[in-house]
Length: 509
Image (cartoon, rainbow, N blue to C red):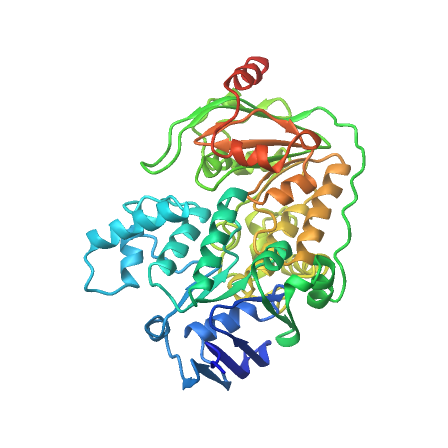
């Protein structure tokens, strides 16, 4: 019999506050697409980092093509033929896309050759990216494209993918799956981490389930249902979302003919963007990352104050030139897509990270009531089931999904009148995603106006009342959820909506 491409036996990794992996064993065959499934904080990312050489295990053994190996760093992993696309990216902000990719490749290649290969690979897989752009000008979705292209350029024997489809259109996901199935048919093994159960069932032919750092099940996901996979992962099926018929109130957010030139050479111009969000409704904006979402969110949150005052209105007040604090005073709360650096200060504890957008614990004298701050943080941790070492745990110590739950919880707990949220469930498990979506609907039912920007079409169809699509800085007309289809929204993501409808909607605005 052919030896497994990768075999892990008894892998254990301990940290001061948690045992991330507890005696984990896993085997991946040549040409096998193997899912690793588990809740946020179950130990998936730690296990992948051990395979890739980023983390050293305390116990256990690793066999590569039947031979014992000790992968001490990512360079050794790449030399063996292991490539990884991280959920949290490993890119240098000040370097270009091509320079970042070049760092991990054979140094006999020139930068010009690497640039040409990036362009060809990006076109082949539909992951368009400009090799000359500095990474700091990219959106989160575009950074993920860079990571995927960098991994594919190494022609790996084992490809590790951590949430690779969170920023792709349905058409692009289909194309990526064709590529991954082709790679597997050629003998490449794939380790696939995703919280999208339907993706795992379609793509993967083996699955290892982790819970609390331990293996709790092994199965063929193609013989399972979403419900049975959920039960294996979290011990129960996520609760069904409850949609109530709520009569919408007055207009809370009004955007009128917003036109903004890009702030940097690699940004996107916003062209005649018009939309409104009323009290008691959830409005969604779909689109492939890098089509103006970042620029629009900056203009709405107050980080970009170049708009004419009347172009952005909150409760009828012109706020185009107001900063975030003024808009927050009006009831606007905002969840950015970048967790670390924008949503939270990595080195600060969770309690002190509340101070970024909340001043509840600041007395009239200006002194901070630290005990009240910690109680607030503890309440959010409990309410949103955040796995953390308490209110003082540093933000960077949390898994991506748990940090997302805390940041979303921080803003929802503030009882906003207008919530603008980007990628609400990116990288969180099915149970946490269901909870966050349920909390968003509860806000809507309570009369809050909610604007959701997401590349997750399933999510938008699940929670939104109306949908827009943003493409190349332009916003489509809105369509009611009951009248929209995934195919239609997917086409609109390429900017293919009727120009006549487009003119009508702007004339009405």
